[in-house]
Length: 151
Figure 1 (cartoon, rainbow, N blue to C red):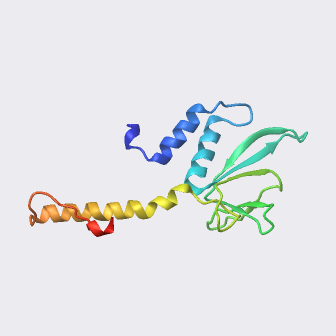
Figure 2 (figure 1 turned 120 degrees about the vertical axis):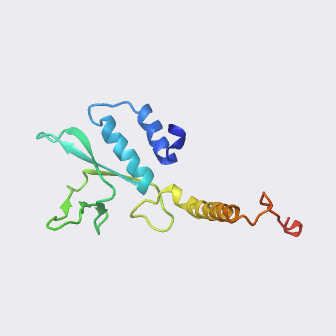
Figure 3 (figure 1 turned 45 degrees about the vertical axis):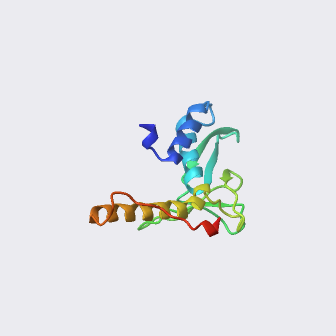
């Protein structure tokens, strides 16, 4: 049921449903790229070329493991493991879709981060109401009161 899905996945599904695949970008690649952008605020596509230097296709590079170099022009695929070594992408071959951040210009910042304090506060009040109700020390309802002087 779509109404039980995360809003991020709903956005991704809407984007993917309106995308028209082409010879450079498949629906699955676009889907992965879009999800990375919504989750991390960064989306990376690597341009793959044929032997003549012509554009062949775009391949998705997971944002979880893709990093910018110190010169901000190079990109690295860094997957931590026992004997994995960072892979340097060819300069100029990575397209970086970024959700701008006012504090820095290297990586993006997902737009949902601002909503997290509100979500946590709502969760805390819901948990309190449940515990209060299960405790039995209530009048059958919870009355919220705000001070008239605050208005």
